[in-house]
Length: 128
Image (cartoon, rainbow, N blue to C red; front, side):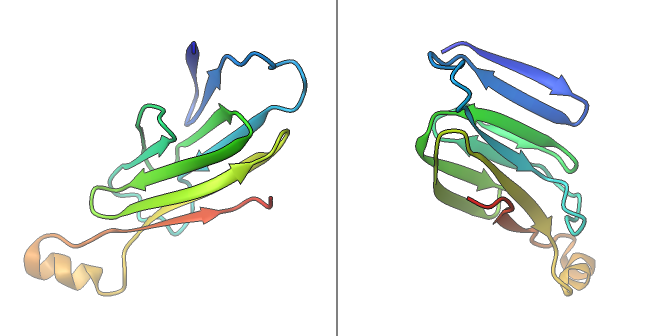
C-alpha cells in the first residue's frame, strides 16, 4: 500500500491509497497531543494497527485514513503503555487526545531523586 506523509505545521496527515477512496465514506482517526494539562515533556510513541510507530511531541497532531472495522491504537511514553481497541464505521471520524501528565508530588520526587514518572492518559474525544 502506497503511503504519503504530508506535514502541515504541527499537524500531519498520513494518506493511504485505498481502492474505494471515491465513495465519500472514508474513515479517519485523529490523534492529538495538545491538551492544556499536558506537561509538555518527552515524546509519546503512537502506533495504529501494524503501521509504523510515530513519535508525537507536545502540540503535534496526526490524522490517519483507515478502513472501516476493528483497530488497535497503541500509545507508549516509555514508562507507561496503553492499548486501546476500537471500531470505526464507514464515514466516521474518531479523535483521541494523548496526555502526558505529572502528579502533585512529582516536583518533590524530582528534587530528591533527579527524576520522576510521567503518567500517560488517552481520551477518546469524539462521539461514535
